[in-house]
Image (cartoon, rainbow, N blue to C red):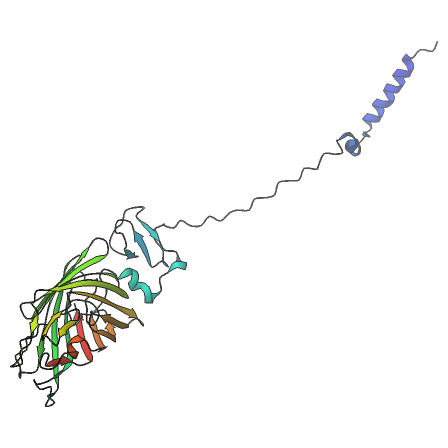
Length: 352
């Protein structure tokens, strides 16, 4: 029996000699056969691009927002850059896409203290009536308005020897936040009749809730009036009441002095020869921006309406011109109302 030991020794020697000669079996090509054919090749993870982090910006500042809303002052928009400091979390910015057009900014930014000239009826407002807005605290304004009128004798004949007109001088003062007081008095350039030209004391007070109380008071030359109004500079409405005078009684041997009301119409009964002013009246007014320096001004005082324009220079100088309709006083017979207003008013105001 042939011994296996020499064969094993011979094979071992051959393998050692091959290994020592540098030739080795490359098994890399057979790895695919040893791996799972259903396994998906793992893809390398994509590179993450660097994200640009924007620079920090304060949530309370913006170069494009017009104003921010303040919780502690309901209903007010405060311009950016205001010296008034606000606590954190009290205001919200208006994004650029909600910017308020310049023509409409008075709706939001000048509601309580609008840039308005003085009305002929005393106090800031339109042409014939005051507005809910008041002068800023410590600010003053002086106004002069001129209104031509026709003068008749007791027989209804008009005097044409000269031009007659009322010159109404007014002075207003912003006492403090929400309070305005004013005085005004008309001066007529005629001395044919002893026609009363009363001195009026006027006031406005803004109560919380965007409502303003006001009034006009005089002696026994005319009616006293109180009113309440609300709105914005381009449109406001109000209601009021006249009181303090008895019914007028006409005597043909002359005439009793007619007491006029500042607001509202007049009622006259011809068969009784008696008359009285409206106890209650309604008023509406506004100043609509045309451009930065011009406003279209309109109002109705319960008897007459006016339409006109007001020029504004630097919120300090105002020129006003308006058409004024006839009212109840212009339709009274001349023995009762010898002085009847023309249909035009022009005036000027200086605020400082």
